[in-house]
Each structure stands twice: as C-alpha cells, then as structure tokens.
Length: 430
Ligand code: SAH
Ligand code: SF4
Ligand code: F3S
Image 1 (cartoon, rainbow, N blue to C red):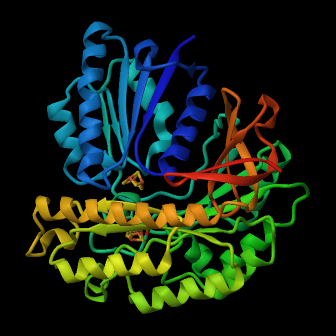
Image 2 (image 1 turned 180 degrees about the vertical axis):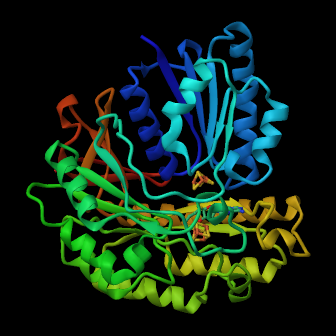
C-alpha cells in the first residue's frame, strides 16, 4: 500500500484543508505514513502570512530534496497559500526543480488528477488565478475531540498588511443547511467540540444576522458539546451574535477578536475600519452579556510609520482589556499589499525590542489573571491524557491540567483550580 505524509503550515484553515487532502488520498487507496522518510507521496500545505512562514517551508524543502535524491520515485507536491502568491510558483520551479506538483489554494480538489500525471512522470505546475465554486472533498479527521468545519472561504477585507485576500480569493459562504447537517453528524459521531472556520465569521452569509441564526441552529442538538468559531473581525461583530452566545450553553464563552494595534492612526493605515474606542466598547458589550467570557487577540508591532507613542497605545490597550491569550507578531512586508509600498518601514531592531516588551507585559497580565482564578471551578473538555495528567480547555478557553485517568479523554469534567504557575492553570477534579 502506498503511503503519504502531509506537512502543514499556517492557520487552522490549512490544518483542516490538510484533512481534505488526506481524504482525497485515502480515497485513492493510500494510507498515512509516520514521517516524510517512509512516504511515497510528500505534500507541503503551505502558509505565506509572514516571511518566517515561507522561510520554514524553504528550509524543509532542503531536507525533502535529500529524501528525493535517495528515493527518486517519491512524489513531492507543494500547495496552499505560498505557491498561490504571485511569482512564487515560478521561483519554486526554478529553485526546487525536484518538486513534481505545484498547485494553489483554488485547485486543491484536483490533487487526484495531479497525482495521476505525476505518476506518469509529468511535472504539474497549475495555479488558478480565481476561486472556483465551493467544492467539497471527503474529509479525513483524526478522531480527536475537536472537529473543524469551514463555514466560509476567502476574505474581502484587504487589511493593508495582509496577503490572505490575494491568496484565498473573494469571500464566499457555504450553504446554511449543509453546515447544520455536517455539524449534526459530527456531534452524533462523538465529537465534543466543533470549531467553525472563516477569516471573518461575522460576515457569514452576508452579515451577522445570518451568523447569529447559524449559531442558534447549531445549539439545538442533544447531548453535551461545544461550538467555537474563529475569526471574528471587530468591525462586524454585533450584539445579536453575542446574545446568541449568551443564550446557549452549547456555544463556548470564548471569542478571538484580533485588535492588531492600539493606535487609531495605525488602525486607519491598516484599513481595519474601527477605532480603539469602538473596539473597547465591543469588549464592554461582550462582557455585559457574558461576564466570564474568554477573550484572545492578535497584535502586531512595527507596522510602517509606527512610533514609540503608537506602540504605547497598544500597551495601554492590552492593560485595559486583559486578554486571556495574546498572539503577538512582528509586522512582515508582503509584496503586493498596500503597506508594502509605504515609506517609513520600521527597522528590525526596533520591531524586536517592541515585541519583547509586549510579550513581557502580556506575561505579567496573564500571570495576574491566572492567580485570580484559583478556587474557581471550570467545566473542562479533556482532550489529552499523558502520564496521568489530563489536559483540556474550559468553555472560556482556559487551558487547564489536572490529575486524570486514561478514560477521562473526550469527557467533560469539573476541575477546581488549585495552582497558577507561569500562566498555567493546575487543578483537581471537583
Ligand atoms: N482573518 C483573521 C486572521 C488572519 S491572519 C483576522 O482578521 O484577524 C492571522 C494574524 O496574522 C492576523 O490577525 C495578524 O495579526 C497577523 N498578520 C497578518 N498579516 C501579517 C503581516 N504581514 N505581518 C505580521 N503579521 C501578520
Ligand atoms: Fe487578513 Fe484582514 Fe482578511 Fe483577516 S480580515 S484575513 S487580517 S485581510
Ligand atoms: Fe497562512 Fe494562508 Fe492561513 S497565508 S495564515 S495558511 S490563510
């Protein structure tokens, strides 16, 4: 039996798309290998959100080249956001002539056809410049606790720093009833958590009334389970969505609401379409309906023209919000985007120094928050048990570990927090 191995980079969208690539490969009669070394087909499902993401892929290609030299019959394919970026497929073709198949984000569903060609010793380089209709592929899920479900594809927001609208195409939403039936069957087959995916879920179906309706429809199934979703764009998150969250214990009390910057001048240059005041008002609104809500965010330092004063606005914002989790990034120039053409790019030394200060500040905030949770009891969905320790998350997305037995995996358990160590919550079964 032939074996495949998929190397996945980037966001949850890509993680889920690799499950679809695996679905196509299983349908072809292939099975999963343990690593690149024992695979007959090696795929790289790539990301190009920042330069570091691309560097990682290129580094791994160096290792795969050596595998190909030892075993020339191995088929190597690269797909996803990186080859979709203008100019990159040609660069890969020249720099890595050992690659057999290069394809993008819009023609992922053609993998079967491309493998036929590659097995007949033809090279394939095929990038579509436009999204096709929403197509489906068989999904091969690993049977863990959480399942991913796409509700939409693409993005129309064109934040000035971001490559996603160029590599994922225009925004399009999946059919309402199709999503409801997919989620229903996942819950019926034993998944305890389903995460809905989209670059901007609040514009599902053209606007938040549709998204709120979807959340309500997904709260109707029997049994204990949790629905999560990501990502929410602050400009589109509305009260009706928060009310839908608050009115159902099936929708997790958690929201990822990326702010990107604290300075209004920078937010405007980023084309985010909200001010820091409007953002903070949304946070207040969410907390008024769901007091114990978990909120996380993405924040970038070193956007072109960012001054020390702008940076300090970001510090002030995170002090005010007190996020449960903050994902911090150094701004990275992406060719083709509006911000790439701006003057006053910030030097790496300043960017590095700012991100270090930001990480340190968030660490202190996180520690203080963690200590304040001691004594609280959370309902934890245990996703892993290792060496007698269970790991899982609360509805508000707090990661909690506790003494557990093997059969706790996949169960909801009440855990009382007894200790907080460096942002980590430790508890015992209540
Ligand atoms: N659609 C989501 C997330 C997209 S990418 C949203 O709107 O928030 C995930 C995160 O990567 C972004 O939130 C942003 O913080 C970061 N990011 C995007 N482009 C970047 C760039 N050019 N440099 C650094 N970070 C970037
Ligand atoms: Fe990128 Fe903005 Fe779209 Fe998010 S909303 S994917 S940051 S363009
Ligand atoms: Fe990366 Fe593409 Fe996701 S660029 S972050 S894998 S949409």
